[in-house]
Length: 514
Ligand SMILES: [Zn+2]
Ligand SMILES: [Zn+2]
Image 1 (cartoon, helix red, strand yellow):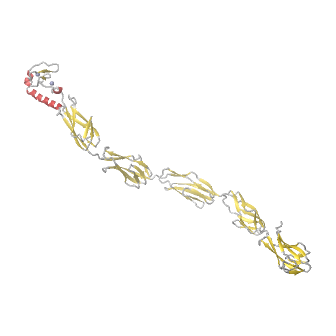
Image 2 (cartoon, rainbow, N blue to C red):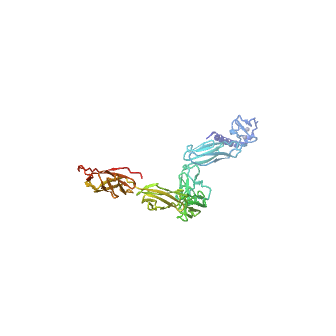
C-alpha cells in the first residue's frame, strides 16, 4: 500500500473520531493561527497537538493538506486506451483521468499486472509477448479502474484489392499492377498470394502484375495467410480494328514491278491488327501476306486489305508494259563456215517487258537463224540478219568465212619407168578435208617437158625437169618435181633404175594471197 493510501485511511479514521467527539470538539474555543488551525497541546481533541475547524466544523486534520469538509476528492478514475488488443511490437496510447475534474488531486498512479506482456512509458503501451495484462489506474484517495490489454497474433479480417485501372474497358494485352491491403494493417503475417480464376483470360504474378490475355470474365484474388481474401472482377474485351487505310487509291505499275503497299490499322493498339491481303484478279497482280504487289500482266485489278473483323480498304492497280526504245543485236562479226553462233538482242531499256524477237536472214543460202537466235552457217558469204520485236528492230551483218586449204599432198600413180609420151596420173589430197574450196588446178613449170591436163594426167614430152603445181581455188599451192629421162624414158620415183632418174618429190608452199 502506498503512502497516499495510508494517509487517506488515516484521514478517514480521524474523521470518524472527530464526528464521534463532535460535541466536545465544538465546545472549546481557540485562536486560529495563520495556518488556519490551532494548537491542542494537551490533545483534548484526541487528534494530536494540532487540528482544524475550518469555520465551525468539528476538529479535524488536513491530511495531505486537504480539508475533508471543503475540498473535492476524486470519486472515480477513467482509463482510455487506443486499443486493447495488440500484436507483438505494436504500441498504443493510454490515458487516465479522475472524476470530477475539479478534484483537489488528479494524480493517477499506474500499475501493470504483467510487465512481461506489455510495458508502459509516458502514456504509451508496447506489446512484448502474447498474453494478457491488467493495467490499474488509482487516484490519490484510492479510487481505481482497470483495463485489460491482450497481446495476441493479429490475422487478416479482410483483404482489399486496389489498383484496377479506372475504366470499364479492359482489353486483351493490357497490363497493370494490383495492390492488396490487409485489414488490420498490423497482421503478424502480411504475406499475400495472388491468383487468377482463369489463367487463359488473365494471369497475375506473385507481386500482383496482371496481364490480360483473352476476352472473358476473370477474378483476380489476393489471399492472406489465414485464408481471408479480397478480389477484383475484370471483364476483358477485344479492342477491335475500327479503320484500315491504304494511303493510295490508285497505283500505276509496270509489268514485273513489285510494289509494297502499306495499310494503317486504327486504333494502333487493336488486339488483332493482322490484315489479309487479296487480289481481285491474281492473274493481273498478286499480293503477298505483307502487302507486296507483284504486277503479273497488263491490266487493272483491285487489291484489298481486310482486318479480322472485316474492316477493309482497297487500291486499284493499273499495270502497263515497258516498251523497248531500241534494239541491238549482239553477235560475232564473222564466223567460220560450219560453226554456229548465238545471237541475242540487247534492249533499251534493259527491262523491256516483251523481249521476244523474230529473226530473219536476207540470204538463207549463207546462214539461218533459229527462233532462239542460234545462227547456223551454210555457205561462205555475207548475211544480213534482222531482229524484229513488236516495237523495234535491228539489222546485223555477219560474214561466213570459208575454211582455207592448209596443205595439198601430191602423189603419183606410178613410180616405175615410163616411155616418152607415156602418162602418169598425179593426185592431190587437200587438207583439211572440209576446206571450203578443195578444187585443184594443175599446171607445170615448163610445158615443153611435160603437159598436164585438168585431171592431173601428165604427159612426158622430152627430157628435163618440170615442176607440177597443184593450186587450190583459195590460192594454196604445192609443187611436185618430175624428171623426164631423155631420149627413151622417164622414170618416176624408181630409185634403183640406173641412168634414168626419176626423182619424185613435192614441195609444200605457203598459201598464196587471194
Ligand atoms: Zn479545536
Ligand atoms: Zn478543514
